[in-house]
Image (cartoon, rainbow over all chains, first blue to last red; front, side, top):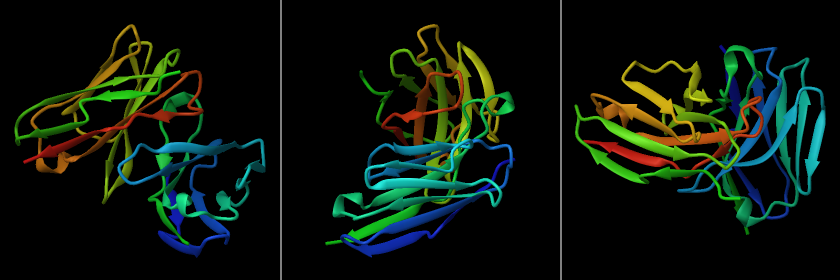
Length: 115
Length: 113
């Protein structure tokens, strides 16, 4: 089955710096890659996603890049703010077939932004 | 549009008991997926339901089961609870035509003593 590795497990940055979180996946048939942000005691919140027919996607200060050949994708947060502090999860999935409704998650990255 | 809701939010049960958790998806969403979240194992997929049918199942023992009703609301049941079942149980809904864009509920925190 699919396996997703996420690095680093913790990331500490100063306010205004950029943060990058990287994930690799094992199933070459995976074609959907979402990122979730989970604040302490709250639900995972979908912040951005990318599909395999796109190499990069941006939404304000957040961007995701995908390298299908190398089977890795990354989350980039620019101009970080203290409210960006949270646990970030990457996930991978193939749509349809025997993978209905299943996201395989990385282990998470604890991002701390220091004022 | 209202988000995904889950009830109850917190539960304390004793080993050997059973428990039923409920999930109401976003209006118009027909797919409900369930996940178990623990500090050690992270987020793990339990199963997915679409139009009252289980379409996919993760690697959990048969003590974990679920169902979906005609209004897309879903329940999951855990029988013969074990200490290791203590976790945050999250459900997520999507339109169901693909796995795209899953939105999570707040979760049910289950503690087994």
